[in-house]
Every structure is written in structure tokens, then in C-alpha cells.
Image (spheres, rainbow, N blue to C red):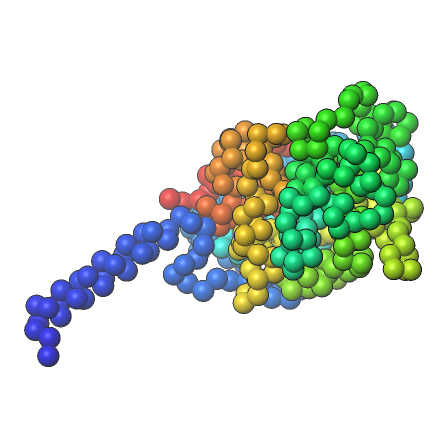
Length: 392
């Protein structure tokens, strides 16, 4: 039998160890001492009062009230400036969109929500982060052995036959440094010409070596989407539904709409090839709540309940800066590593961003997801107001 002093000593040591572990795990953005909450299907999503999750209710409400005043002026509700901004259309757009709206999650619970968050609207380049995730699933499943492999090793449709293009890797596409040369769905890589590209037209320039020059370029991203279609031999909307959206219990209201002419023949079947944005119409039409689910999936490092949807390794790689070329950018995710994107936010935070100001911002340090759509403000202005509501 243990002596009394020895027994008390063991109890003290175990208590100290437990406290050290809780201290070590604090501030990581992961709920290590309690069961992690995941929303159920549809509207089965629990809410919490700010005080229940360590937030100041008055300050959080101030943040929401400010956000409501920031309706976008870039994109009229009827999308009537679309061609002026982006050029000749290739695909459809809805007749109108919702007003500015958003949702804030803390520890997975809804702590604030405003506007119509259930309407499926175009989300523009936020779609690029969804496309990145499908690239991650492709790597996870072993269909792509190494993201640094040339795409030409996997795709043989003529798009990577030239001396310039055969050097392009999957990673180049994901970092927007591919310098892919060519025409796809009637749009050229160089964006030369006001009628075709609107305000987005560019001056002619010399092509650079793949991997050495960053350019935000939807033609090249659309080439990535077509290449993934070739690898999977399945339409990407079908893949996204099966591999990501159904497992996270998303609604059935979202659509990934192709251009009118973006169809490819794969193994004798005509399949739609989707875009990484809504620059020329089409694109991912999705509601705010489903975007919040997608953001929460990444906050949880690719896991949803007991299933790893996309590997934790991919989540880390996709949200990490890879080299000095380009802005603070991961694999089609915007980063804050240098603190330039959102000066008042943690350096570990990152976001999916699209025109019209569509934003999914993820903060692992505070266990927060913010989705804010159709706003005119700098996301940092809302972020700093939301973080001011987090109690130390």
C-alpha cells in the first residue's frame, strides 16, 4: 500500500500535468478539453449567445451593425456592370442577388447572422478555394502523385504540348504562377482587348518561365479545372458534391454553373468544365451558410466529425506561403503571413476571396469563421471589430 505522502505527491503531480496540458493546448483554435461541435443537416445548426463562447455581446452587435451598412457598390443587384468590369460574357448570371449578408461562427456555433444567408448567389473567385480543395482530394487519393509533377504527365489533350506549357506543374497552377499560354473557351491567356476583358484588359508582355511570375488569371485557373476533369473523368460539380459538400451536410441549393461553351468530351461523353470564378458568368452559386460549413471544414483541418474529408497535410500546405513569387498566397487561398492582408488579424488567419466582396475568413487562433458577402468594406474593418468582441 502506498504511503499517504507518496499518494498525495502522485495526485499533485497529475494535477500539475493536467494544468500544463491545458495551458499547452490553449490558444490553438482547437477545443481540446471538450467535444468539438459540428452542425447537423440543413438548419440543424446550434446558436450560442456571445457570452457562452467568451465574446462580448455589445461589441459583437456593433460589428454586425457596421457590416450591415457596407453594401457593395461594385456589383449592382442586377449585375448590369458585369461586362463593363469583366468583358464579354460566356455564361449565365442570376436576375439579381441578395443584399449584403453574413454569418459568424465561434467554436462552430452561430453567434451572429444577418441578411439572407440561404440564397445561392455567385461567389466569384471564392470558387478558386473550392477548386484548390478538389486538387487536394486528387492528391490525397493518389491520382496525382506529387503536386510538383508536370500536368503533361497526366493530361494529354494538347493543352500542355508546347515548350512553354509542358513545364507547367499542378503547383504552378495552384499558386497562379503557371504562365500557361493558350486559349480556352474563347478567352486567351493574355487578356488583351477591352471588348473581351473589360476593365480587366492587360497590356501585352513577354511570357516568363513557369513558376517565376505571379499573375491572377482566370483562363489559367479554368485550364486547371479542365485538367482535373481529365484526371477524374468526372464533372467537378459531381466530385465536389460527393467528396466535400454531402459529407459536411451542405444544402442542395448550390450549383457550379459552366459557361455555355465549356464542355469537353471525356471517354466519349460530353462533360461540363467549370470555372474558378464568375468573371465571364457561370461559376459557383452557393449560399452563405454552405460557405460557412466549408470554412468550418478548414478550421477543423479538413475533418468533419469522424471523417477526414481532405487531409490535414493538404490544409496546411494549401494555407502556407510557398516561396517569394507573388503575394501572400497559398494554393488558391489568400494568407496573412506578413500581416498585410488584415493587419488586425492573426498571422495564421487566411481567406477565400471573390469579387463583389465575397469573403470566407478563417481564424484558427480564435476558433472563428466569418463569411461576409456583397460588402464594400475592407474585410479587416469587420475582422478587427469581431476580434474586439473576443474576451481574453
